[in-house]
Image (cartoon, rainbow, N blue to C red; front, side, top):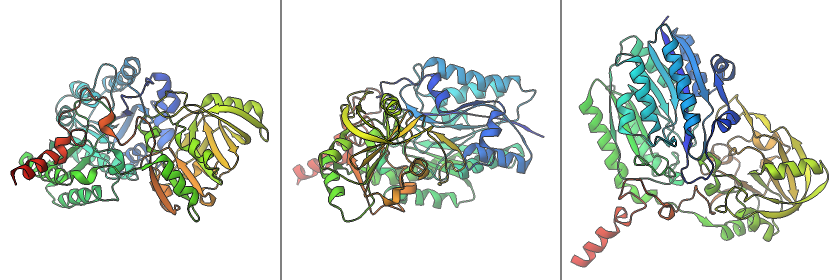
Length: 503
């Protein structure tokens, strides 16, 4: 039985965050070593679960090294990155033989020492196993992919969806590619195109134009039997690195010229649609007014600038402040991370009232702390089993969790940041989302996987924060320039002015 090493070192790094991602935070979110991998992921609809399933079906031995639950915060410390990479390389080097390496990566990880972490990791793996051993990895759709990473891997398989409801399927695809390479059925060659674009996540959702049209073209190209995989990666704009932004990878069957041709075709098409990638959001005051005055609900207010899935602290108070000002009723905020407030509420006890400041304690970029008075409805350990379409079958831990009712506004206070991508994140704590007039989610797009079916209306809110849509306001120093939409000349404005002048 052929032996394939597997592992996951994944992180989406927001370089504008003031919170470093150290080893403690990786352990807090879930860091598994050796055979723990099988216990956690067997039977789940995850990438790890897919790798296990295919290895058993196709009869190759999967040897786990280290596996982390991907999360987002600030730059990864050298100690954390070095520890995880060492565990991966030790697993490779200690094996009696290695015939393949199958990884889950993110593509937007930045460490204190390395901007292009995935390229560096894949280079280290390649040096360890040699040129002839297949190296295949999955990538998040938000990967800021580099030429270096594409050159070091044999196949990189990016997610096709945002919200990411196809991670299991992409895991199956990558693992089946590994089986085919182990049996000399394919000889992949890849090409990368990186148009000068860095669209905000709000316009990356794949079931809406323009990304829907781009993905349709990608899938049309994949119908060509000479093409093994097409990965369109809009990128993660909150990482100030050279390779931030859009990347298109086409992997062909032993045909470099074909891969380059198709990657260029998609790149040109994306560029032609660039103005459709401009974000459109609603000011806080207007958004809350619309929600309060709406007939029926739920009306979902998406606080995308405070999205923990993109490295924000998940403790912004701008929308909560406006809800209180307008005396909103039958509302819920999912979630607001504030360990200090959680402890105060627990000390007060269920059924008792407490006055305290909530939120705004990580920085001053998401609103100031807000004093509230409410009664404690529920205290929980914060764990729930996911039943929705994302990471189905896994357990999510929010840390100690409290539901605080502030005059008709229920705040789900937690110790750990997790964006609401599963309705169990309400129901496990006694909140029925379908019965709410207003739902505030700390999320940009992932919330849509489970909220679109229940929402009367979704309003994307222009709240303050480090995951916001106003990219030109960010203090970039390393990104490619000029780049859309940060630089005016990429919008076509200068060309339009030139044409008008000549006319």
